[in-house]
Length: 219
Image: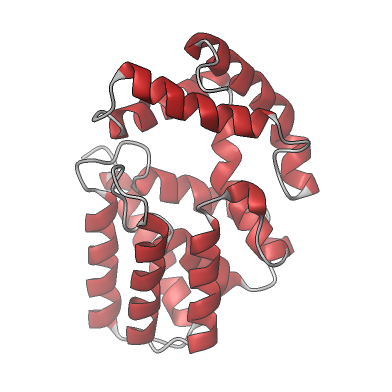
């Protein structure tokens, strides 16, 4: 698989993150990591994959000094897309439920698990924001792909389109166009000043270009 090279680095990160909440069971840590890996390698995924996790961790590590509660953000990354069915409307809720269940297995503080779950649920609507700066930093990182260089943005769009292969072109254009129009109408695209400064200009150019290609259908 194309993401095989990512697995050792992700496994190392997982072990560090699990140790932060005081769990050192090699068997449990390994079993849950294998379950996460299997989930992010499901065949319907083209963007929401292990590559996405790796990119998120790399980006967030650049802002590590700004994160007050590292375990919350780390486990939100691991679990935010663990359940992903492009035809379903409850992926975030089911992902939050799985996060709570597996964090309980790991012996995490229930309040931490609930904060992780709330942050996962917040990914249903990135523009609404989270409860504090840590939440907003994670939400911005998850959306940062919209401000990627054009070739990376185009690859992201192709991969998301592949995940929605069950939609015909007209339905895809309506749904995607509505999403892009909602972004274009925001006074700012990111909650944190750091991400707004780094990604907003390119994001608006990407959005405008894609809307033009779609004929602004839905917008």
